[in-house]
Image (cartoon, rainbow, N blue to C red; front, side, top):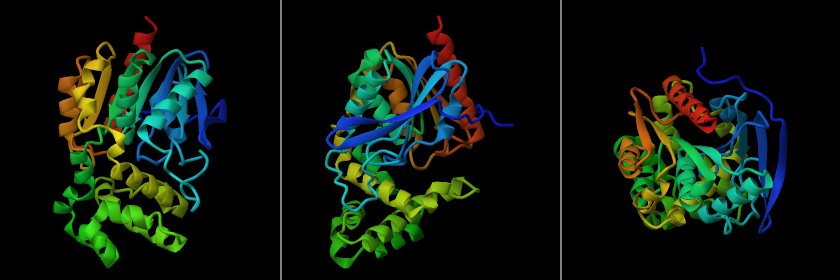
Length: 322
């Protein structure tokens, strides 16, 4: 039996013009008069899915999902060859969240972020702490250079065959640049065929760790070429710029989260986001609890992971009603 709430339809949705030619798609689920909650998806560039609303009790929460710039149903799409990503930065996403909050007349909200979404949640909360009533984070990342290096090079120790294939697919003239910058350039090449192949090769590399932990295979959306293009372009764009964050700043400034209750839900066997980051954050954030889920990896949909996330959002619902 699922530990998550049943999937429901959105009761409202729209496109919000946030400037710079960008429109972000948002939708709301659950109780229009309930405690506001915002889901921050991973990737970056993975887009949101209606299933994310299932981590919140729809009777108690006004659940808001949105697609970050240039992915999902936000416009323009990174899959389009003419889309410029120069205005897609972490700090612009933080500003977009504030514009969405004001547009929806939300005073403060509970945040749930997974993977890259946890980095974005921490950045937003440290910038606007009065607008965050609580946070649940899963597959915790802070997108430090060491974490980026692990994802784009360090995991080669565990997956040498897949790593060699990724390198072999780089043209000779790009090999000196390394995998990250090499693939960023391929994903911004002037011809669509080069971009499509690079996106496919990039996802073949990422699939190595996902398939190890998920017997059901990689996510359905990964079969869509436009989705792979969008996600790979945005990931390499962000990682090449170290997410526009000063190194280690989210751990160093965790004291700004004082007074915000949080739960970090982390799989012991998470290869994409090793446990050390969540552990370091739990030591630096005075009001959070670290929940380590044994035999779980990076996916928040794992039954035990989902159970702990739902428990956390349930706790925050009660907190908001005091």
